[in-house]
Length: 471
Image (spheres, rainbow, N blue to C red):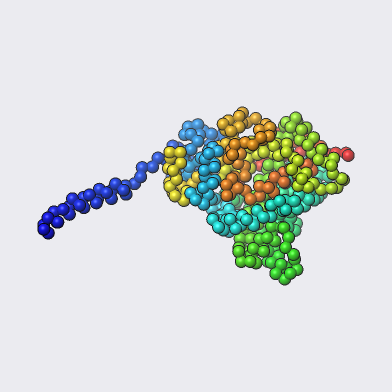
């Protein structure tokens, strides 16, 4: 009997081995086509070269889309990366945030924006912080922000525009939007001259190589970040002491809401500071670029300018001298928002965003391996005839009706839709109203080149000639 049992063991083990191999053999994966380039470096040099010239679509994305299709692989900044294009891809990856992918920014961006900012938070921590930010930009918050925004813009125009014949529009809008996010959103009263240069230095290092060696962009940015942090920590602690001592009542300002959450033990002081830093950058630099390019498009398309001006003059006729706009007035600026959206379609403030695959992802017949980066791009839909016929033509009427979901994505989408989206919209519309109703203006260089370092900006600063309108 024992001999019979032992005689069955070899075939039994052979069957077990075959079953093990069948169920545990590596799955064959089909990667998207594309070139990985040199080890570690990959195609990073070509990517950066195209980015600096603001030719990412023409010189980097478009040639690869033509060769490999809307999904292709590459290697960028040391990471194997799959670039995806199209509204379907945008929706899939944006709505699978925290499930299949997570935000994945370069090391330098994380170090300078803050490890405790909403940019790096996942899951419940992200939802908590986003809820606090969203509450300050709800209907009540926006109602209160508009008149404060008007005051801030008028103060800047009186000081810097009234007695000038020519100004740098891009520089001027950067200062204005910087002031607005600090004063109107956070309620922080700081002289811009004391903080603005430091923020500009930080911006220069957000996509630089994270080499903290004296003289490098990243080193200068880290030093500037330390200066900003010191000021903000003092402001947060002063605010907390006043609120705990009953010397300040809670208001609808975002800093108050963040500090209240800090007092309740829901977030840390580091989270408060890092999110102030992040939101100042997110709200002011991209918005100033959108405003500058909107004026460029209005200058180059006089018929659009005339129609927009009529919209604002009609609103102005309903206001008494010196009376601020209201949120109801802003809602009437429908054509202006069409112009702004068409401008951001052609000149997106960001080229896209990186994600990291948390698991192997099966998509459109391809496998994106765990740990690889995923890059969605604004150009992938903004410049695609499938979504916007004759895509390089400026045509605000495209936005008279709703466009296909996830085809227009200058503010991202899904759970990571830009938290400052509504503030940016108000900023653009209110600023345009103040300028076109009070000043005659013209762009000095209508075909001024756009460069990137690291975000896009007019190479000459978008100088415009101005003169006050007589009423």
